[in-house]
Figure 1: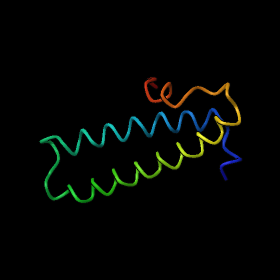
Figure 2: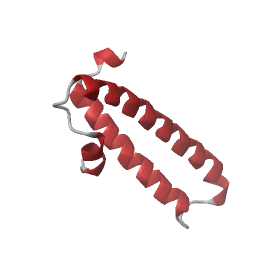
Figure 3: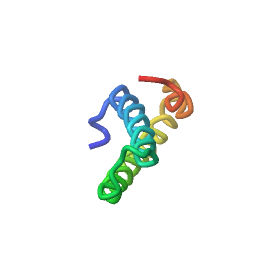
Figure 4: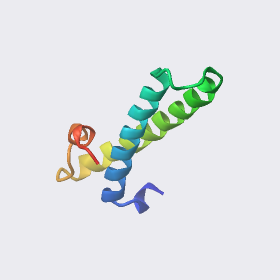
Length: 80
């Protein structure tokens, strides 16, 4: 499957997941979240973080093969 995903798609997926993880962490820490939803929202955060890490691992392998790709640090500090 990973060979079918373009570099561009992977870059945007990493950036989007990074943003979503940050938003979910913020939501979990906020007073806006009902207590009864905390476990479900934590599970969602865990899933987002797992997906993010899977994309990052594949991206690292691609970057080893293609030094023209932006560094991971560049991706994580860029805004969508």
